[in-house]
Length: 352
Ligand code: NAI
Ligand code: MG
Image 1 (cartoon, protein in one colour):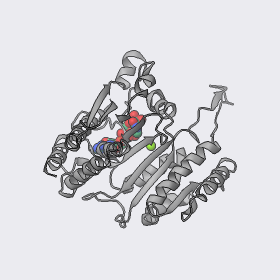
Image 2 (cartoon, protein in one colour):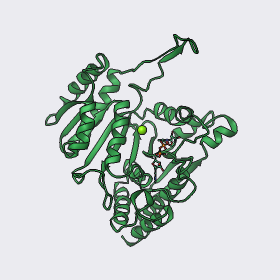
Image 3 (tube, protein in one colour):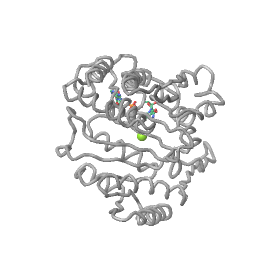
Image 4 (cartoon, rainbow, N blue to C red):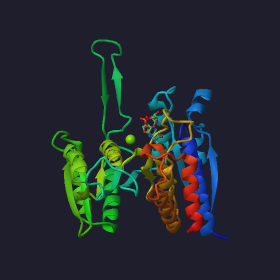
């Protein structure tokens, strides 16, 4: 009897409900072959639920997830509910309660995908984004609502412990890759938190001999990602900078539909969460044409995290092979439906 893992699935809204089941079929297939099982606990936590009873998840939702091995998320968001409600009602509480302080986003050009870049072959980047503090803090407020002197403040929060553990994760990752680490900063314009970020990152990375650390201003880094993507390998960034940069770099890889992300609790005291970078895509939801690659790649990262690295590699190889053979959804210029693409991946898993 092989291992068994408990995974909570929150398919969510829109195309989340289409791509999550597609990826689950492929994960089950590879698990069967590799001799382990995934026990899926499906949760209907979503905007639909919010519209029905005023909550994105049950009051004890976080407790329900706490004993699972991982969380597999589709996407949440719908035009009928403000985005800050869906985000702060589900995703952000999960990331914070389970100390998922690393958001990991690998980006490279997959076979058969056309990038908007001329020099895209060299694109192979892993973004390490700080995921629980920084610019996305709950500190701040609004005053004088409706009056001419109306105001809002939003306080960024950087802690030594928070920056240090992020830098440590990035440094350890860089050691397994090319040894080069780029840190996104803005210490020229943001004069307190960003020099602090730079100091803590550089002190931390100095403990890893042989690593090359470069601090690059976020605006210049955005330009460099477009002009010379091959000069970037592991990039570490604060919550806001990492958020923006990761969508930029994901777009360079051809489609937001293929980009995965992992919200990691590296100490493994709590479950980590795996999701595609894209949202619920209300413009194409319900038509069965969403690209499931981002969700499948997130699934492969989850398998790797669970200790089933071989299964993760096999799943990745299967969707890459389908893409290389020209099976493509509409966002990639093809005609395949979500189901067609999923069948192509399942066929390759069977053959392998
Ligand atoms: P989006 O990622 O949902 O869609 C942007 C564009 O990319 C759309 O034209 C969409 O059709 C296309 N697209 C996205 N994923 C695709 C896929 N797998 N296959 C084919 N095409 C795909 O971003 P948008 O439109 O800004 O947000 C829609 C909703 O999703 C909002 O409510 C937003 O808050 C939410 N959202 C949720 C996220 C999450 O759950 N982690 C992340 C980003 C947005
Ligand atoms: Mg984003």
